[in-house]
Image (cartoon, rainbow, N blue to C red):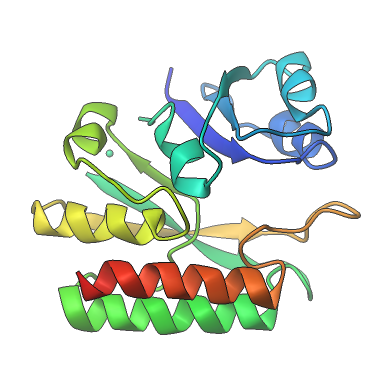
Length: 186
C-alpha cells in the first residue's frame, strides 16, 4: 500500500477532512512537527500513522517518514477564490520560473504534493530543513537524472481558521522565496 506523507503543524481543524478523503489503497503518514492543538491524536483517530518530526520545519517534517514514482509533483488548481492567496501564487510562480530557467525542470508549481520512491529520495541527501526543502528536492532529483512530472490537483480553501505556514501570510511567502533563492544560488 503506498504511503502519503502529510507534514503537519497545528492542523487539527483540517485533518479530519483531509484524512476522510484519502483515496482507497493509500495510507496516510502524518509527520507531526510539534503541534500543540491535538493534531497527532486526531490523525491517529482517523487511521493515520503518526511520527514525530523534529526539528521544526517543512523539510524536517517531510523527510522524517520520506515516502513512496522518479518524482511526480501536484500542480495546484484552486477550486474557489481564496484557496491559494495571490502572494503565494506569485512567489511560487517566480521560483518555478527561475527553476525552469536554471535547471530546465518543466514544473510550474513547487507545492507540497509530491511522490517519489523512499530509497531514491533518501539517496538525494537533502540538507535543507526549512522552506528551501521542496526546491532542493527537485533540483537534486533533476541533477540525478530523474524524470520529473506534474499532475493537476484540486486545491480547496482550508477549513475555517486554518492557514498555511508558508503561503498563508506574506511573511511566510517571503521566507519561502528567500530560502528557495538560497537553494538556487548553490
